[in-house]
Image (cartoon, rainbow, N blue to C red):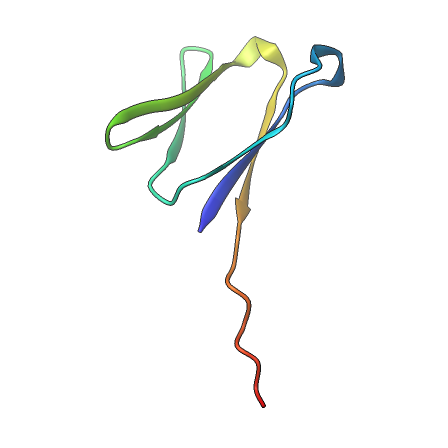
Amino acid sequence: MPAYLITHPRDQKRDDLVIEDSALTLRFEAGWAILADQDGICYAIPAGQGATIQRVDVQEPAPREE
């Protein structure tokens, strides 16, 4: 399942955030990074804030062979 890791510059003293939802899409519009699903916008970050967004693909562990 894809997830998005959002990190903020240290001087903003904001917590990093992980958003996990397979239905989310990321788009960039008018200076904003927008995470949305079929119901609308879930989270939006202005470009000037300096945050970074990284997609993290979480994989299920492979089954162990016995």
